[in-house]
Length: 177
Image (cartoon, rainbow, N blue to C red; front, side, top):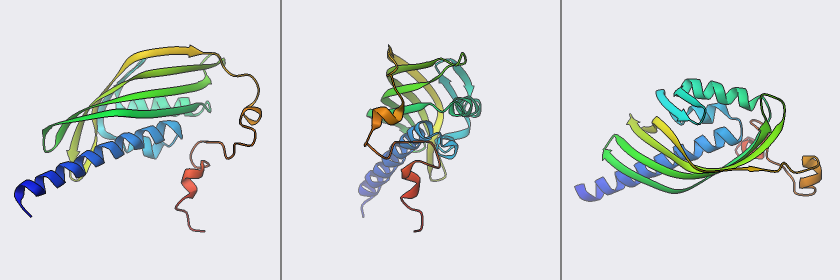
């Protein structure tokens, strides 16, 4: 294998590792899966995320308090652009669409559609790529009317319905039968 080919393969592997990390973040937020969420950040990472600004650990604790309210979240990523500054550092811009429904601190259920970008500095430490610093940029925010009726009424025969860790069907895929 030529050195050029080896470098190209390494870059492709690094790109996929970064994308996988981004997708773990979405699973962590959408499924209230703290392990998946935590795996997206380095322990010393920072996050500027809407009303929250501080350490990634603080963001994870803030998210855990939201998880306790039983929200319904769906995050979709598109347009992932990765610019390598070095073999161990990358600037990553990822577009997201997030649909969020849940109770606020006042107990009122609200629903919002958010569109924006995760502007991340990723670092590779050992063989792992994770977020070292994140700034969430909001390009669209739209309050929506909360649907009437229960989820059972709305989903009807469309089963199973997504849920939080560990009850969501995704966590059953690789379990021994």
